[in-house]
Image (cartoon, rainbow, N blue to C red; front, side):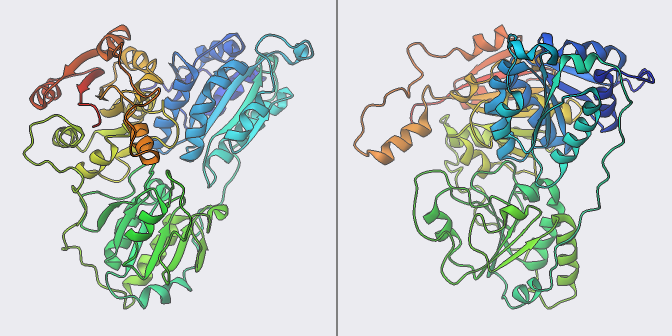
Length: 541
């Protein structure tokens, strides 16, 4: 819990005090960062703001990943403080992940004193320009009066649909300079619903079972309960995106059919039996590999999309009807209208057809991706958030696990997200339990996050699916060359990675599981702090 007894800022507060006053007013409890000299004015001002906690990451990409996990689970914008040009450069990869998942982050970085930027001091640079390709808005404060207005604007833009990260460079001298108190919040209008008059006839005409609902990440974060109610009202099948930031629907629900493939032919074939596809949210038809030409939806299907992001309408697939509006009020109005219409009745008693298909191997005692997923599902509890970055095991985990909406979080882009995101997710749940699943390759991108988990004594269980190779890349290699017998740069042997030693070096308890029973025994052991389980999997698994 945070100490809410903050010292009042003086009548003419410093720029740093203005920043921190605004953070408190915006409901921020944590600042995730890795400091340098240019950030010292902000850190020193924290002494007067005991209601704000600084979470130390040992590398800037980890700081962004922690904030990403916190914002996803809390539903509130998270704040990151980076160190000048070099620190921002380290963080860019993690920023691309946050941008892809539309995570509301306010990223700040200290800039050198404006009075000697002309002389190119060490670590100065065009910070706003460096960040611009990966954020919604990028700016450098140029006067002391700019500071408060820019921070307020940063929160407003980060939380306005489509949400996403923003960046603000804060020169040292402006953080030290005294000036006006913080400006008030930027007022926002209440969420508005999309018009549904044209949608109702399209849904009324369909017979039960002929409509597919495809739910994206936007629904997972904005209106998961309404998504369930709509599926039950329509008696419609629900599909999720092939590359989800979060699961948008309870995976044990009888209307859930699973996650779509990530290639054109697979998506088209999966939806071939439906007459109407209602897309709720954005980026639902994610494509990964390989490239395929041709329509993504079956010929003759009626396609409709509802989203708060006007620029995303029709981006995934051609549309017969595009509806721009916030999801929660739109779905609420739609459910109410359908309840008073002749829409198809719900068939919630029908058994789900896809949940658990990929798990397979029932009764098997071998330790592999399928049995690993089953064991983790047996151990999983409703209060445990799953943060996943195990590419080879992911489809098995998604099929096996019984998950509430948004209980499962997936990396949105490049690797290195999950280890730090688990830290942020735990803090967002008042130091709640987190299961972080990782591939052995993914675990090497941000291992510094283990130290922060240990320092904060967070109950995070890190499970490394260790097959000593980049297995997904080997599968793609074989797709390009089915006769391949050797692979360049895809093996993690000679020497083998010692994850137990890595965890111990970071202050995290470590275990090695070589059998299913051994894994079960480790999971049953009580653990109040973080732990890492190195799970030995056979190659090509």
